[in-house]
Amino acid sequence: MRRYGYGMMPWGGLLCFLVVALLVVAVVIYKVIKEGRNNNRSASNGNALEILKERYARGEIDEEQYTRMRDRIEK
Image 1 (cartoon, rainbow, N blue to C red):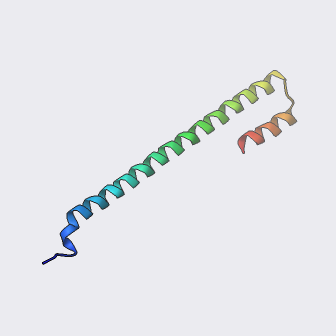
Image 2 (image 1 turned 90 degrees about the horizontal axis):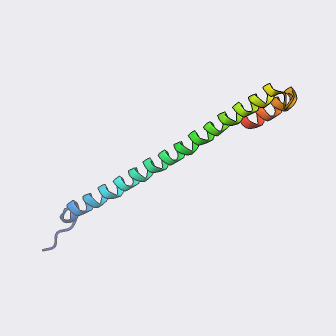
Image 3 (image 1 turned 180 degrees about the vertical axis):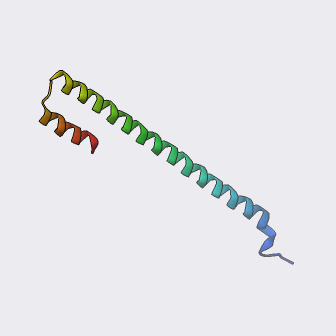
């Protein structure tokens, strides 16, 4: 007599667990990579603002240029 339903449960349960585990790992990797990119972007914006402040302090650019460039960097 054939058994349907629960006869394959151990293998089916293991397969579902592996699929869910792989999905969780993929989501975690995606989040880590995305967060790393955002941190790099904000660090480069901070560098750009420091350079801009230095140029303004040395008199290389006037206040209008400084304000316009700062607004563009902060977007």
